[in-house]
Length: 128
Image (cartoon, rainbow, N blue to C red; front, side, top):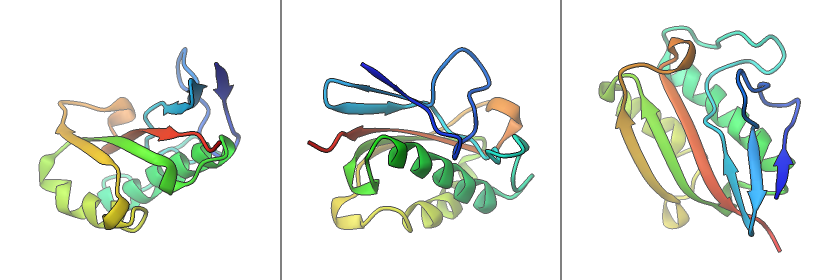
């Protein structure tokens, strides 16, 4: 097991790590729209801006572990409002080729950390 942390993604705001590499897989913590330098929310009230920051943060964690988007096999998308599904999906599609996109779950939740609009986590296969 190896702990993965990078300054290019927000520092954890609780007792967890950005990701754990174990048994050939990378398991990431959920990423929200925090700017990694200022630790402030990006795109307050704007789900597209938040989705872009979330995916930038997730990409930084993947990169630190030696992975790319092509290594991702499963994502979970948490939305504060399922009416934002199409907007988030449009941003998400910019990161994943539809032909090899990972499995995905998407759920609406009552509340997310720091009252953000979207959170995403993933599982990736570590490169050999």
